[in-house]
Amino acid sequence: MLPDQGSLAVREGAMAMIGLGVVGCAGRMGRTLLREIAAAEGMRIAGGTERPGHEVIGQDVAAQAGLAACGLVVGEAAAELFAAADVVLDFTQPEATAAHVALAAEHGTAMVVGTTGTEGETDARIAEAAKRTAIVKAANMSVGVNLLLQLTRQVAAVLGPDFDIEIVEMHHRHKVDAPSGTALLLGRAAAAGRGVALDDVACRSRDGIVGARPKGEIGFATLRGGDVVGDHTVIFAAEGERVEIAHKAGSRAIFARGAIRAALWAKDRKPGLYGMKDVLGL
Ligand code: NAD
Image (cartoon, rainbow, N blue to C red; front, side):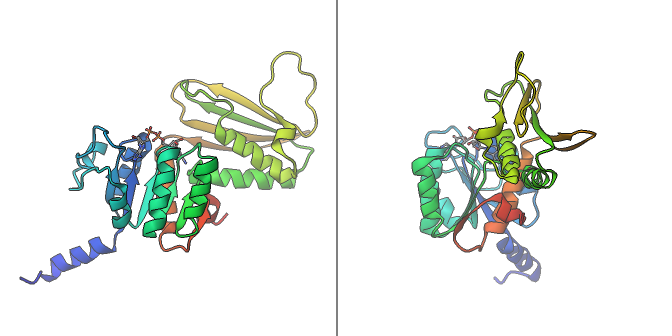
């Protein structure tokens, strides 16, 4: 029987939607991504995988993230997901990401990599895969933080060495590293704006009689407490005036939204390794 006009339109609508796959779909970011995809217009969940032996294997992809069931079950076979999805989002761990990028290259599927801590062999594999498909990779996918990085570089270049640069960050009490990776990225951006290397001018903490502030130093101050997701402020202080630019993260959803924006941008893009700077046109 031929479908009536109404159901045909519904089916064509579903076909036109962009299918996003999530590897590591039961992780903190994986579940946040699923919730954001479900809430976004023009996108659908194309499937999800987890590491072999994970308790959610065989469960409904959306339901395990607290959403209404979508009729797709969590699998272990990432190859199937790469064949079915328009773009795959990966917030897992470096070894898993290394395997996933090879599948992305094999299937010509665009990919967004948010996994941090990749280095050496994994970075080489990502670069190799990016010769055959579009990959967007960034250690911080928040649109706001990426804008802050760009602004920091510009402001540092315009204000020049008469302005002292201090970077203040605050995170929740469970964070183990200091200063935060994002604070260090901001420090690098400020140093780049001044045409110097951060390692040559950074002061990562102060205690006791440390002497007057050397000209050109880029200082860091670390605050820890409560459930703060991540606050970063870059202060440019001179005689008589002060410029401050800040970003405050309220939830992990900002990383997921940035990743989804990157996925839309990467779909149908020519092969290459891109960053959020490219996605945002900064
Ligand atoms: P998590 O441990 O909660 O989630 C990771 C998930 O990946 C787990 O469920 C794990 O079982 C799964 N996984 C591991 N190996 C797998 C495999 N081979 N196949 C499928 N799934 C596999 O961690 P998280 O907090 O969600 O963070 C994940 C990564 O994303 C970390 O590297 C973190 O630093 C990074 N991260 C990046 C951003 C960003 O903006 N780029 C933001 C937040 C977190």
